[in-house]
Length: 406
Image (cartoon, rainbow, N blue to C red):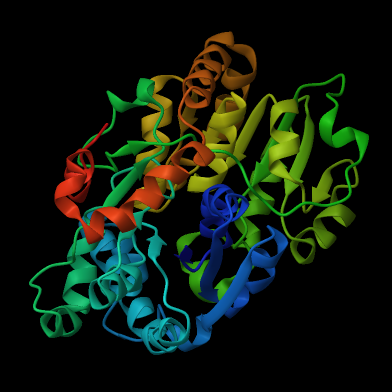
């Protein structure tokens, strides 16, 4: 069978899909990944086959509507979610011509996308193809659909729809021990174990061996250098430098996971800090604390490794996921407006010195590890095609269209 995966704008969305896409390919299926041109090296780097369907500049996610004020958006979570939904709606529209050309030449049997890859949902309706929703994180993303539906109202009307269509199957990567604290219809559905995926590099012993001092890893994700999209959201290199400066005041070894173009000056300023592109899946188990912007992929890496995390979140969805983890006791969340030198130092100290955080993080990691691996779900995805052809023959899958099945 042929499976088409659709990513979002961030490399983190590529990493989220890689284990399932690889499992399908290893089971003998053909897998293509439709993505923006900037993510093509990332898709290649995780060993998958990319097809670029747009560039980030073409999509003009932030600049299309001058009436949208990112700073005002950040002060109002409802407006923030609506605006982000509209951005992804525009991304869907900007990719649709190239996607239509692709499926006209290479017709997929199943389309797999994230919570905001609206193009996949629309394309699946047009083709009569099953659509699988693969979440990028743990929090409830459904409120973004208000903005996405507004932006894509003309396309929905052409399909005879008055709202965004439901998926045929929804995967759920949330460890059961965290479910009690999750609000809203986050991503209930078929449980699947989340496993880390990221770009690799030549390993050195310090990456997988603990040193004598506690180890703190600081990162603000893969998009730290993208000024157009993220400077207004507080994820630029200045924010990273502030975090590192604060962390170095603790008696700990500091690692900085960031692209090389960001850390060159940082290494000159702080030669005692190890900085560069660090494979987080390798390094995370050696860490005592991971400090980040609360990005979904970074938070999930820390959770998977059983490492306490300090998340300094600015975007609503990052804070929502961070709060879920911190309320469970596996980390601490500090809103970016409250992230002073004192508050960050105090939070890191608490995470290093209070063993309860590590115990809760390890409890969540063990619970996550007990979920079915991506390879174990290959048969369920294969059955979607048969279910579409003969829906009455597989009643066990019928509830998946409504996100049921856990």
